Amino acid sequence: MPLSPRRSDTGSRRWRNVLAVLGPGLVVMLADTDAGSVITAAQSGAQWGYRLLLLQMALIPILYIVQELTVRLGIVTGEGHGELITRHFGRGWAWLSVGTLALSCLGALLTELSGMAGVGLLFGVPRWITMAILVSGLITMVWTASYAGVERVALAVGAFEFAFLLVALRTHQALGPLISQSLQIPFHDPGYLYLVAANIGAVIMPWMVFYQQSAVVDKRLQLDHLTMARIDTAIGAVVTQLIMAAVLVATAATIGRSNPHAPLNTVQQIADALTPFLGQQTGRLLFALGMSGAAAVATIVVSLTAARGVGEVMGFKHSLEHHPREAPWFYGIYTTLLVLGGVLVASDVNLVTLGVAMEVMNAILLPVVLGFLYLLARHALPGPLRLRGPYAAFVFGIIVLTAGFGVYAAIKGIAVA
Image (tube, rainbow, N blue to C red; front, side, top):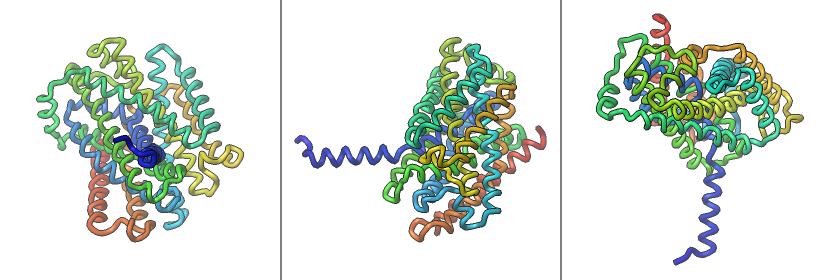
């Protein structure tokens, strides 16, 4: 029996509501698989085969737990992360949190832009031309678009990251060795621990917490959107870790098997190491698409997040819903960061060394980031939505283990680096 007009209208309205809520979780998770994360996963597979694959899967629920708290805080309070810290703990603590954000964003921005420059070099385009086109394009987009427009662009470019799944499939790795080697975990090796810390830092980053909380506020999501926003976050958490796993598997099945000590100091070296197994043109194209998507969406997110974070603590307008004339400081900081990053990258930065080091730094910053997130979830939310009871104890344990192990692995790895 055909649906009545009323039921059809209800179904259509429901889907429109779903699509209206989707976005912040997917965008921030696609940005999570940024150039630095891709490089970290590639290094992991090349040096340790599949031995860091289980870690990628274990980080899915941890990533969801962390980002779900940001969604809850943003929807219920209607305030950004920096604003909440200022209100509940004071401006000094807020500056400490934003300081960690600034470090994370600056390092991430340099790796994203370096990733794009590396892709340009694969096709003979000089760094300065790539930077000029990218930086001017991103500045124009943000100065002329609303949050919804920026979100659509971010999702579109981030979709290219799925090319990494095709790369992994084309390596035709055997399932038996993959499972067997993934269970071999050399926790005694400092070099392994260094990459464990890098992978943890590549998945849980300060700017993700700030961005998603501000994004749900910018999108004006309400309490009745919370369930769908959680689903959006859960889908994003699975997708980003599947992409990380795909990069690791691809490099483990190719570089890790044939030449595990191959130098991986530039994007070109990683692409060149993969292309003999995938075909020169196909391999280079797939890698370029994946890296471009990862770097571009993360560039958008981290530069906006840095400008928003400073605005939340200093009190100036910091939303894409404000015209540049209404929020000159917000747009000015965003623009300055991009221009400065572009100039630095045009002068030649070692992407791989910088990328892995930045992810390790993120792991060291985790106690500050996750500590504030947990305290806000305990004190800034009303009773029914407050983090409490057994789940609060569980989240506390997850945060302590994740942050503690991230810092421990980073220190052990750095000590012998």
